Length: 316
Ligand SMILES: [Zn+2]
Image (cartoon, rainbow, N blue to C red; front, top):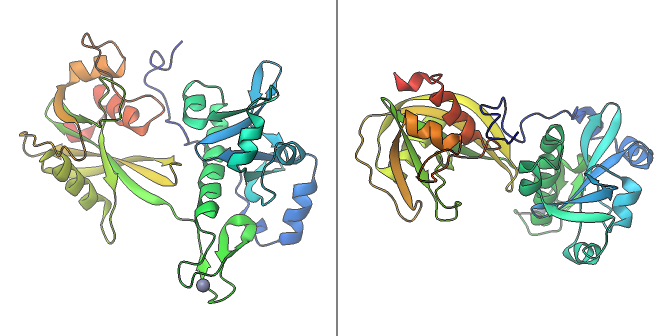
């Protein structure tokens, strides 16, 4: 059964986190060091958008022992992600040179995370923890120096903080809010496509929330900027962590008050109104012209799927 036949799915990817973040342990350096040495502790090793997985017989394994991770060349600095059934789970980075050295090996594979997730290679219940590892490793790689005074900073709190020894500034991992919205007008839905999308694919419009902006205002502004459509009745639906590198997709619905689309071609290749019947075929990948909706992994699929099934109040 393909992901599209299972439509509508319960949840998009990266949503169900089975880890207990155990934040109370983050400040206990001795405890974290001891947990690193426990044989039951495990690590996710991430490099940019890819994950290092061990190849056990036929199946890949994302959770590595700490010893395996270090043997594969992971950087020694561990980020404490939390506890899973009492065992500590860490995130670790790895250099490009170490990844290069792994490529000829048969017992380990370095694969792009999103592809593995969509193909179901990584168990769905692990994706959120892997997303944590990916976002955190990336944050440390990009924030090694104090943004206030330029001094090299030090990892603290199990990786959940970086301290500046010079100006004493504390730096915390950031999460960037992004609004993604399903805009409807009666029985039609507004979808757009970016140049880099797969041919024929359309999805919900989206954009970053700006400084001192409400989610509702961000939805209205982004929709107007990208498509010339004014909208109202902005309603929150659900969120999805999106570790590229560290966004939180905030899914909303809204009702359009005009229908004359003016596409901003610096942002979108196209934007159109689609009927509910057409959107249904697109999301099930059965459209006669090959048009397609977003993948079930994405929150946009769930926004659209709910509307297709008549569960969106914004259609009123
Ligand atoms: Zn500083």
